Length: 202
Image 1 (cartoon, rainbow, N blue to C red):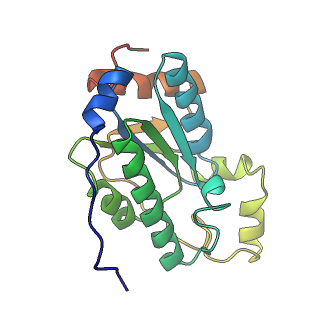
Image 2: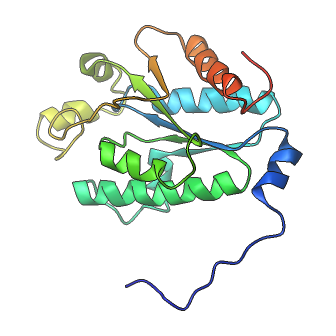
């Protein structure tokens, strides 16, 4: 049941003032794709590049979030939806804090991703689809999850027993099978520069 006796308090230090101090705009970079597609690798590599450029950043990583904020959730469709809802709300707070927040989640359902997009003004949610064939993702399966899923040990595993709904019109599609990590990072940085979020291109 939602609380009714609460009031939103406005801060004197606004997002605009934070962005002026940072010398860059805040943004949500939402990396999505199959397990093994390179979401976390790319998100952290982009963060490293941005950090070296003097940007204020933070990565919300799927596994890390499930150690704390979403430790109480399983992997049913309902739990995954709640997981992404919480992450979306957290990302929105980072946005207001003037930070470039990068999220690395499978986030397999289009409706869940759209729900997060709808939380913020147009243009402030950038969906980055890390596209990689399932068979290639399986060869990168360092955790052994695909093997366990195919053996029936993991239920509702995305790509095997649960669907992944590809983005229809992502702001950026990165072919992580064909591109090097450096090329992939360059593509993200150039997109941010082209949109005026940062002042320097790759």
